[in-house]
Structures are given as structure tokens and as C-alpha cells.
Length: 288
Image (cartoon, rainbow, N blue to C red):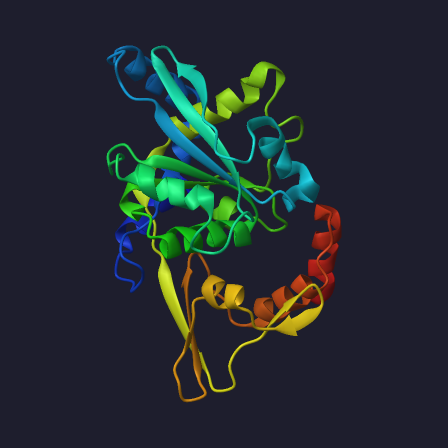
């Protein structure tokens, strides 16, 4: 998660929340400055040639951005095969892409591999987890990391904004949307540029809150126009049957504050979501 320097201080100090053990870490937006990238490059040029490659995971919601985010999966594959990219002199990065929709909650292949590789990572050299999608996809990825048991101390999360509002991306320094054009570029030059930014970025902690809701009548979810509650829903939304007719939901939450109106607008929007960013913006305006 990328954060501008001006707001990084307040975020790094806000540690008093109750939430899952460990805090995801932010990739600092200061390193989007070309001079910062050049400085980082110089540091790496003087480093040992035997240093390990930086690890980058890209979790893609291929329906985001009118399907544009799926370019990562088309080029890199969706099975997590490693692609070694030379990003600085004497420094490489292994980049893997995964479809965040693939697999069942808490057992998705990409997150299971991330959990395994976190055992070899460290808080000083964390794995970069880039999320290609909207605000909901960022929270989805964090929820999956928590559910899978990923060591959050050993990951740093960043946002590739393909959503409608992209509030998370705006508030953490990545900007309102991904720039136009081919996401990889000729000879993958654009991807290499982006990976350099992700790897060179500063890292700070970011709070994750845990929200608990208890409902006397249980929960139901609408999927493909059908209302119901499946085993997949129970795992995905952290539902527990309390045995007395009540159900409890526990979910992580980040970067959110509301007086209620946006919740009503958000629910209306989700019921009528379109496949285009422009259409979604118009729908938000109608609902809000």
C-alpha cells in the first residue's frame, strides 16, 4: 500500500487499533519520484551480485477496469509462474501473477504460495504484494492473507488502481487510476518500470481493523441474482454459527470512515454494477 510522505507519519503512529495480529505495510509513494528511483538504483549497483531477487506477487481482479487488469494474467499467466526481470544493475525481481478469483477462500493457490514464501522472507526484505483492482479487491486480498495465515510482517501491499473510486489508492499515493496504454509495454519496459517503483518504495505500517457483527436472523448474500448462504460465503465472510440462532461475522477493515450515506449508495451500486468505469461512476452519482 503506497503512502505519501505527508500522511505516512500519522499512519505509522496509529497503532492502537484492535485487529489481526501483524500489520500490512505500505509502499511509500515518495519513491515514485524519479530521483528516488535513481538513488535506489545507485544503492543496488554497489550491492553484492549474490543478493536474492526481490519477490513480487500481483493479485488480479480481471473484471476490474472494464477487464483491462486482465492484461497481467494474459502476459504473465495466472498460475504463479515466476518471471525474472532485471530492474537495476545487479538486481532482479521475480514477478508472479494470480487470478484472485481462483480457488476457494482461505485455500487460494496464490495465497498459499505467498504464505509458504513468507517463511523465507523477512520484515527487512518483505514480499511485495500488488493488488490490481479496486478498493474492494485490496480488502479482498488482505482478507485472504489473514484467512490463509500469511505472516503480515513479511509482506508490503500496494495498489494498482482499476476500480471506480479508488479511494484507497488516492489516500495512499498511487493516484486515482492507472495510466492509459498497454500495462506491460513493448518488451515489458513499462512493467519493469513499475516493478522498479514497487521495489524501491519506502515501507511503513498500516492499521487493519477487525469488525464484528452479530445478527439474530443470520446472514444472506446475493450472487447472480440469487439470495442465499453457502459454505463458500461462510468462509469468505468469516461467519460463525453461535448455536442460539445468531450468527457472527468477523472481517478485517482498512482505510474507511463513514456516517452511513455512502453505505446505502454502495449497496445500491453493487446491485447495479456495470462493466465500464464510466458507467460505474454514473451509477455512483445516481445512487449517492
